[in-house]
Length: 239
Image (tube, rainbow, N blue to C red; front, top):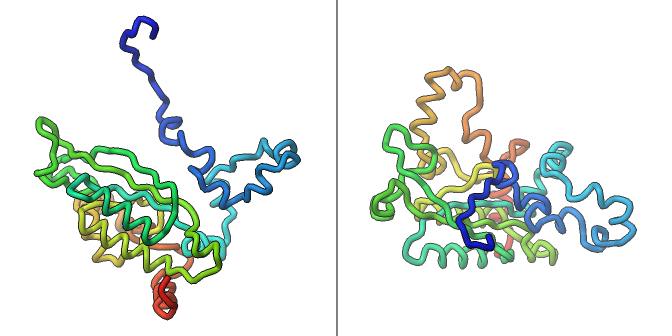
């Protein structure tokens, strides 16, 4: 380094992917209030337990807790193409609907693997392909936390807002990460994702006869129907 020579550093895949995971990004304060978590007595006696693993938090979750996680908190990663005003519009959209700060934004690539081998991300618009490559530049918009209006005890239409964000995402040919809940019907889900290769593989290995469809595994909370929540929100006053 002192000679300013090029250096290659290798980071294990697991550590790279979960490099922000220790504090569950910045949402640990939603799980453990700072008045407890930063208390010297708590840190001395129980600091070794923190931060908790996400898998551990999900394992004992009851139906009530899962519903609260879906309707009172926001955990979303949405991948969107760099386009004219897309980044600016996405930030404004997320800020207006959720009022959660900070937002996580980082660049990413989406590759064009051809019509037969394309994964669930749809092929990038040819106009967005970087010259001399087979990929286009996208960005990830991460929004994690509890909307302030909920903390203030005000009415908040979580599912309604998420469907509006999903509509924006489909319009600009983006896609959410499917670790999070989605609130689309089957037609909207198929419009957003390229499921052609997925469906072919499912049929080729008879997975369609034995395993649930990707839509069924990611559509809202599996413990109840998000459409019921949407109907309840329709009767609420605007945020």
